[in-house]
Length: 270
Image (cartoon, rainbow, N blue to C red; front, top):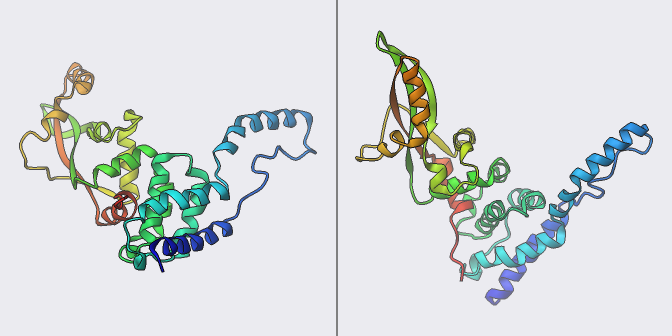
């Protein structure tokens, strides 16, 4: 069997999973006709507000096209004998999730990589079913941050503590988990970087190591001298306090490395 025929056969099997994914009709139907006039007006407003979403929700045809193109491209360098039918507990939820995230190129690439991983006999074990739910819990910016950890294992991160001279052992936290990782990742909403770090730690892709720091010189100075912290430092001094930095490490977990291998790292595309 030729490589093209093997890929086509496997994609056909995946398309069967696509057909099995329920396509819900009347997604944006207005409220029940029997409601009162005032509620009808509200329902119409809601319908108008939600109507653009209907354009973004992918149907079977869009998902099928995606499989036949993008996923097939990612498998082009895989020998035909290595291409297998993915496990339904991975492919089914991934295809269903594409209905609502396919319009976002950053997130759909994670699903494409996961599907390609699940269809390669050498990498299928990395395609954990839980990864679909993890991607559902990520924003595009958080996906961009995870790309950084595909090439680096750890990044510097700091807290800013304030204290009084007479009570040096008592401190307050004025800033927590500050880093430049959002800038390095090219995040769209930089002011949410600390929240992104919290969420990535929540789903156990990343973790913060407290009480330790990266030994290489010059790693933390760009954070501690960042002009964006000047206002915080000034307010601390106005209140008669002093400040110090708590240096920490933000690093990828073992679980996060498996996620990156399955969903972030690109297969060779011919």
